[in-house]
Length: 345
Image (cartoon, rainbow, N blue to C red; front, side):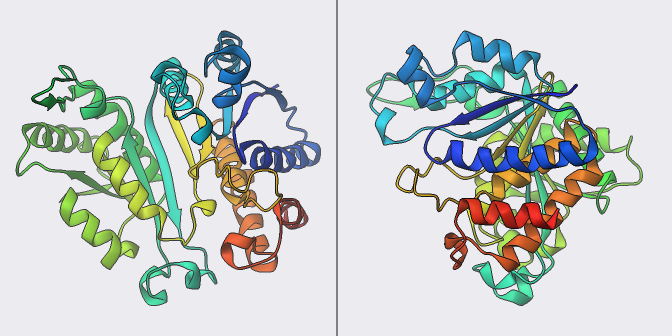
């Protein structure tokens, strides 16, 4: 019986995860999956109730689950708290507890919805790429780091195992897609980039069916805007992945369309890319598409049910055309859009 730990979080998180769970339950009823969903407090809600964003009961729950479905966390309410009590600190602790080292963020412009992209339709049409970002290393975690009155310093550092394990995720993903990987670095300036490139090239020898190319991060930023349709799987480190994934996120036209998965040593985590949007929380207008698509990724990557993941994606695509939510120029609220997805399952 697959166990799913549900972390609704803050702002619109509870609303969009409720929609995602409704879709999972509909599939469970139709297919007899035997899903068990248990809710845990996390983020700002947990700080309000327990004085910390990642309580011990939640830690135990996610470690015992087969998958974690997260809504959204944070908001101005908690911005002035000590760092250890902020929701974002809880998210970093959650990633560490689960050993999540690879973030998968797809960016796909759905057919018939090219007009939503800020790019011209002839450029946006057919975009279907997957960014694989290393999540637990690089300059965000490298030592030494610090700050004084006169200066501040951070260290970009990667070990061979860190590069190999995230590159392996990228190559295996490419084998199920169009068999192309572009590895992004800054090898012309940074020693760590040169090391990254050499390590990826060595690992690529074990995947002769996947074509590998390299790109510098500054050039890749340009390529994603000028010719995003040319790319399949984009592999990169933590800092560059943070930037490029946000750039790619605008290609479909709305953060409300973008799911993500984080994979690693223990329980995988699935969450929409968008934030908690406290300004619209409780109004019933939040777009739940990204959360529902994240549930689809959960079916594919955590439960090994890619055919059901594909069904979820097709149902969301149909619902977006029939009943677009307000952030995409339509009028369908959260529940109306969720109902449209359910009808198209």
